[in-house]
Length: 208
Image 1 (tube, rainbow, N blue to C red):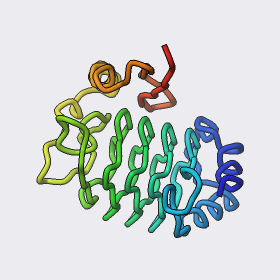
Image 2: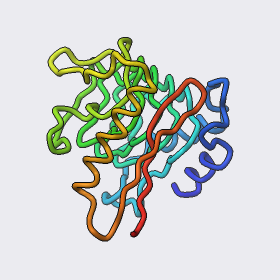
Image 3: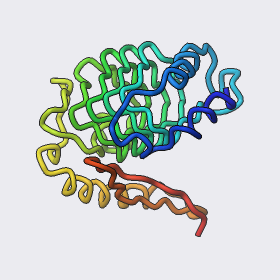
Image 4: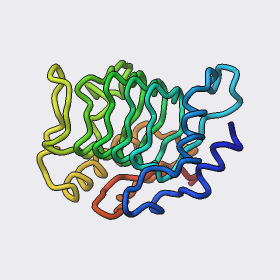
């Protein structure tokens, strides 16, 4: 799996697809193979499925097994994630604009700093536990009035604001939150990331 994920990361780093073209046939074929795997990290697989900072807009990830996958900073704009399993995955800072999460499983999934503007989350399965003080995993994300959300949960109030203003609000909230939970041995730094027509937040961890 490490060889396959490396093959995806190298030709498709985030920012390499300004026109939001779908993955090339060979990359999509690899994503299909990765999504069909039956193992996952801590379940016989030696490490996380590493798709950090990849550029995969409009990817077909229907039914994909993305359990505990590392999706930090990935560009998955317009991706189709019907019934995908993202349990325990880490899409912090991912660009998920207009992604379709129909009946996707998002158990213990952390979306801090991600952009879900226009995404379809109405039928997604959110399961906790969530971070302290959060009702659902999208409280610290950038969204929009076009984001489809579950009717039984409260939409973040800033989703009605401009993306740049949202990014600043979330940046301050994340810095405050992570300053409380980071250990004395490490420091977590958040920054606003600006791509073409997109705002997300990125995180880096460093020792003091």
